[in-house]
Length: 121
Length: 121
DNA sequence: CTGACTGTACTAAGAGTGTTAATACACTTG
DNA sequence: CAAGTGTATTAACACTCTTAGTACAGTCAG
Image 1 (tube, helix red, strand yellow):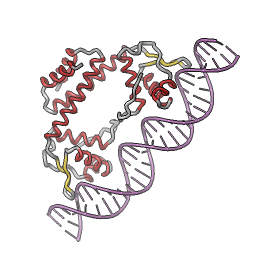
Image 2 (tube, rainbow over the protein chains, first blue to last red):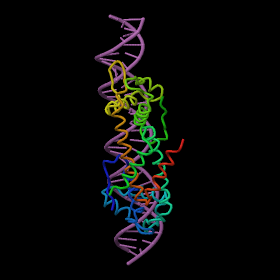
Image 3 (tube, chains in turn cyan, green, purple, blue):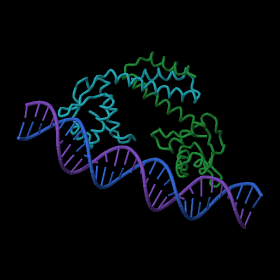
Image 4 (spheres, rainbow over the protein chains, first blue to last red):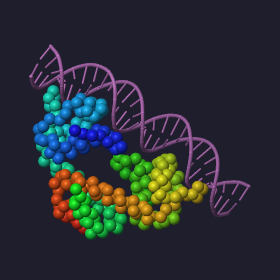
């Protein structure tokens, strides 16, 4: 379901958070569907249950999932997640454009790159 | 010359590396001009000389500056730095476009955002 | 040559974070 | 009741970042 990247400098729990968000945004995990249990995912990824728990707690804090004691963790509505994701991307793009300006990259060149990347695959 | 952001999660030495690169790319620091000494910058930023040394060592490793024992640190040619910077941005943009695709953001919308950000300030 | 400045190297210590391990408890469901 | 859930707690370990202190070698102006 998820693959960890140990070359990634970021902590494991953070990777789990992002991967889960990706799966939800991609529609692999639908609203109200159940996530793997803390212990199950820990086994699957060969990490400690505490680490998974930390990731799930963060996902709940962000409103991405909801938890029911004794039953499990479930995917929350994805509308807010989609909105957050979009805002996050806009923010990143804004930073990137600032950098591009500093590097004397013209708007035309930038747009050309965007089109090129959109055409890929 | 440089301002540290203690809200930034990244280590200080990494911030120093990036800020120095920015100053060089912006032309504030010209080729072969001298950087502040390790001890001087440490005093200026109220951090330990070792931390500055680490940043400078990293900058030298990346070929951004060159060091002369007993004399100081100097800005290397900026052509390779410019190239690296451009490649880095392209890579980041590529990732961003991938995310945008997943989020069902059209090429048109994306380009519109780019133009908007370019128009700012 | 001397002194003050450079870079560089090393060790030690402390703080913070991430991760693991081992329990324990409450809740739900078959 | 038993097995599976989430949740909480404590301890320990590893790793990284940062600081502190010291030391040594090179450069340069006086």
